[in-house]
Every structure is written in C-alpha cells, then in structure tokens.
Image 1 (tube, one colour):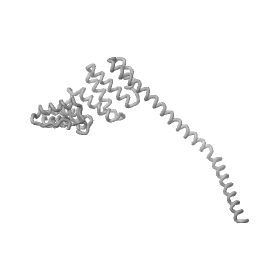
Image 2 (cartoon, helix red, strand yellow):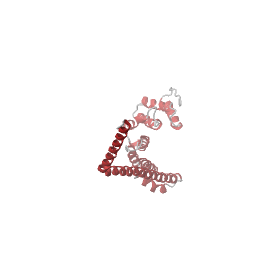
Image 3 (cartoon, rainbow, N blue to C red):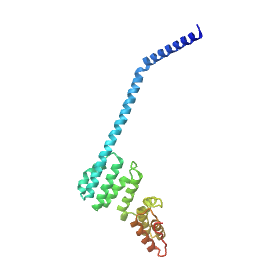
Image 4 (tube, rainbow, N blue to C red):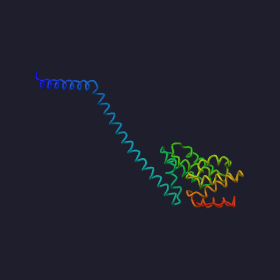
Length: 227
C-alpha cells in the first residue's frame, strides 16, 4: 500500500472507531445524558419562572405601599390600615419593615408610645432588613421611649450612630447629649452638641438647636456652624 493509501485507510479506521465509541456511549449513557439535559432545561425554566413571579410580586407590593402612602397623605389612615397590615406580615423583608414602621407611626399618633417602641424594636432587630432601615428604627424606638429609658441606656444604644460620619448624627447625637445632661455630664453634652452644630450633614433645624444648646452650656464657645 502506498503512503497515501495507508493514511486513508488509517483515517477510515479511526473514524469507524470513533463512531463505535459514540454508539457505545449513547447506548450506555444515552438516558442519563437526556435526563441531564432535561433537568438543566427544567432548572433554567424554573429560574426564569421565579424571576417573573418575584418581579410581579414586587410590583404588587409597590402598588399596595403607594396606596397606603396616598391614603395617609390624604389624612385617611383607616384606608391605609388594610394594605399596611397585609405588608407587615409579608415574607419580603423590605416591604415588611416599611409597613411595620408605618404601623408604629400610627401608634405614635394615637399616643401609644410603648406599643410603637415595641414595633420599632421588631424592625431594628430584624437581620434580614438593610442596616439603614434598622438604624432608622433604632432612632425612632429611642425617641418613642426616651422619657422612660435610663440615660445610660440611651447613650449605649445610640452612641454608635452619633459619630461625625454617620447619617444619623443629628437625631442620635441630640438624644445622646440630652442623656448626658441628665447624668450631669455637661462637658460630654457640650462636645456632642458642638459636633452636631459644626456638621454639614445635619438638618438645619437640628443644627440650630445644637448651636443654641452649645452656647447655653458654655457661652464662651465659638461654634462654626456647618463648617
């Protein structure tokens, strides 16, 4: 046989072996391969279905929450109660937390500060919720029960939020300073009020109170407002 004929013969043998191997693999593992492909397609379809359902559920929750906001804004808190109560028991952490905050606000408006504080505490302790919402709940909880809390308890709870780089410096710092005053720690209270007064991250209303408090505690203090 010539070299070209040898090469052609070997190629034919190789192709025949490959076909035999493919047939053997299919005969032995064909069902498993088909099953794996089908399973993969089912998983893919399931993921797509879950995404579609999740998106639809989120849209529904957003509409319900907006209806509640509109009812509250129009002064019809009773109309907001049903959608808010429903969302407060939902499995979606964000909407559930917001609904509970709205429930707590209504309790505050009704003069039920103790029940409101408990509702705020539920959100503050919910680890499935984003930290900003939990921090807001902590602030509101402390405001609701400030008069009944021991001053040191207020300081311990809010001190981590009463820092210069915190978005909650104004609200948290103000309560920390007031607790320091109750404990007759004038220097600490003055320092906190001064920190608030000189921050550009604090709302003007809180900053103005901090300026007045700083000057009242130490008339000689030079406060650079919102530096």
